[in-house]
Length: 54
Image (cartoon, rainbow, N blue to C red):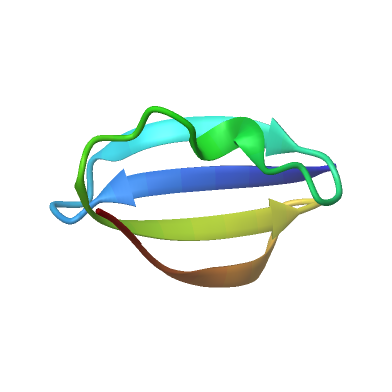
């Protein structure tokens, strides 16, 4: 189980969800725009990056 944090381009937290391996539906219904994400496992950041929703 992982924790996903999704922020808008201004740094405001948009979504925080728990994600199981290969789960893909947690980002449904996002408004168009640029987002930054961070993924944590046991309080350690294991991934981060940017998502663009068109």
